[in-house]
Structure formats: structure tokens, C-alpha cells
Length: 333
Image (cartoon, rainbow, N blue to C red; front, top):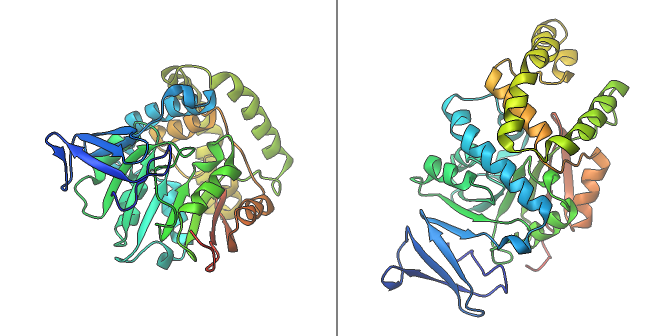
């Protein structure tokens, strides 16, 4: 990993120190020390951890991290064990597989959560680095830690601990729209890519092309989230279980019937992808817990890519925008 890592404070080279000094073998517990500014970062449980002090994090970042600490500790193992109907199954089917596969490639998952997508993408043979600020990294490591082509790193998307121009691809599903500055994240991630390499994302749609009812529902959720996102995660989770019965009766169950009779209409309904209680509750939690949730039109997604310097941008619609664009081949790292 030292070939790809750099000090997030100054960009300097890092050296690994184990229990008996400088280490040239993988360490489970030790320290990474910057050779330039001498800042030290711990390695615990085989995970390099670049978690900045809370005084350097914004309030939104701290709140978002708490939300997803709970998410992945509570839901992370279950979604893989019980094979939840995850949107990322569909995302991956829309992406040209050559962008994510190949034994000679090294990719980054920006916001790996509990590691379910790490597991799927790693099956294509590429080496994948899973990166997340939340405690999801510990859940992810339990899932993928024995795979030779997967590494897990903890850190902040605002303070990336990677060298410029080292990745053959980066993907990020359902993460960048929860950041205060999504455009800034596109620019920072672009700097980590090799020339000609793709950034692949999934982000929420603003539903500007949908019916007026959709806009009303999104506006109502946005207002409610201003309150709910400040509650303790366990309280939000309990409230989502209370909300589950009407959502199942009014949305999920009718959608399941309509998908047989009128597939397009059924698929367009909210919560149409599952009837399972735990999956619906997890989705409700993701609606009401994060402090930030940006939504984009197709043109706005293209603008995010264009302003970060990406070319040949493609957008596919599936409950949002599955998109990819390429760093120009002539661009230096």
C-alpha cells in the first residue's frame, strides 16, 4: 500500500513502523510516519487509519460519519449474508465491465461502507482499495480482509491520503451526493487517476423529469430530514421501523403488483425494488439520517464531470444516475 499512500497533511512519503521498528512486511498494528512532516498515523487491525482530528472536520462531516458508523455496524454484515436487493447489482450491469476489471489494474472505491461492492468488483481481478471515513471499514475488512487483491483504508474524502495519478479507475456509489461540496470531491478524485482513467459514480436524481408528486415528496422529505438528521442514529432507526408498515402497504406492495401488470409504472414507484422489511428500513434510514443529500439532473451530473476536467461522459438512469467519464489522456497527474 505504501506505493499508493501519501501523507494527507503534506503529501510526503510514508514509512511503516511495526512493533519492532521499521517494517517491510504487512503489519496488523503499528504506525505510518510521514518522512517529511513527521505526522504519524496508526495501523489498527491491518487498516491504515487517516482519521483527522475532529477540530479539522466540519460539523456536517462529523454528523455524516456518525450516521454511517451506525449504518454499517448494524446493516453491513446483514446485506451480504442475506443477499439484499442492492441497487449496486444493477449499477454494475450498466457499467462497461472493462472499466472495472483486469488483473493489472488498481482501483479505488471512494466510500466503501461495509464492503459489499468491494467484494463484487474484486471478483473482476483488479486490485481494489476500499476507502471510508466511517466504522464501515472494520465491517468491510471482516468481509474482504483475506482477499489478496483488496486493501482497506480509513480516511476522509476531504483529506485524501493517496499519491496523485496512481489509480486505473475510481468508483463511488451513493456517496458523493452526501458531501457538502460534491464538485470539490470530483476534482480531488480526478487528481488520483492516471491519464485516460475513468471515474464511475452513482448519484441521486432530482426527478425533474418525473411527475409533480415526486417533487412534492422529495421536498417533504428534505424538510423532515432537517430535524431527523440531528437525532441519535438509533432513534432514527427505530422511527424508520415505525414508518415501515405504511411504506410497505402504500409503496412496495403495490409496486410489486404493478411490475407484473405495468412494468414501467411499477418500477417508477418509490421503494419498488424490494418487499423485505430490513431492506426497506435501511433505505428509509438513508433517506432521513444523512445531514446532506444533493440531487442532480442529467445535465448537472455532466457539469460535475466537465468542471473536473473529465471527457466522454456517459449517464445511465436507474433510480438515479450511473455515470462515468475519463480523465484526458494528455493530463498530467
